[in-house]
Length: 255
Image (cartoon, rainbow, N blue to C red; front, side):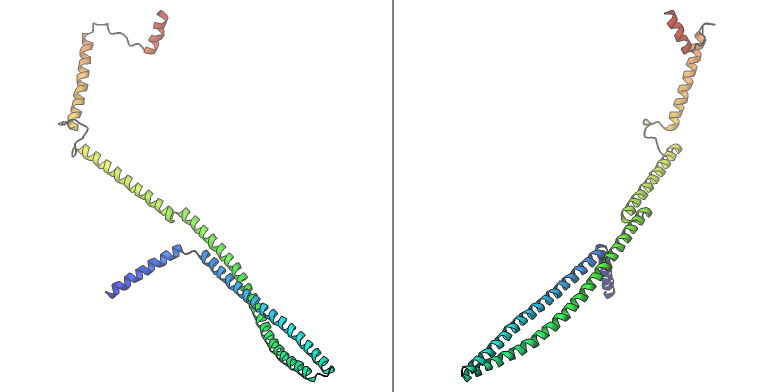
């Protein structure tokens, strides 16, 4: 039982593979793969753009913080000149905190710049691979199309294609049927000639021998009647045979 089940499973797989081969078009698969690669390239480019946007935002923040440190330093100098050491100390404290933020943002900016450079390089490499794949894809598609056309032409010329094969089978069946009918007709003629079969065209009770005898008898009766008519004619009364073509002009002249 297991062996039968295995053979049935194998048979279904073979048929499924054949159906897949007929339905599968390598050109469509190549186009689909190229489309997937283009989508991946677009995602990588969007990633590069997002990282570049984040880097630019950090740069703007750094610029504002740098301006803030310059302003706080100026405020500290003015407060100290006005004898407000406490205000000068507060300004310098804030300036120190801003400087720490600047240091953190500078590290973040460097990290983003490094990521952007790596993504840009990866996108360039991926774009090159996608372009190379597109060129290879078009070459394979052109070769496949040419091979498919050549195969169809060869099948049409040799008559081994599916359509031409059906036509060839129909012609072969028609020829076989014609030969069968010819053989049957010949066999029936031989059977009728031999007397094994009756001719359906003859009246009931008459066969071919009877029909032949009647024909011979009719011919003999005609000959006998013609001989009696000749004997009844007086001597010299038989008119000479005149050609109808010559007699017709003479009759026209007399008239």
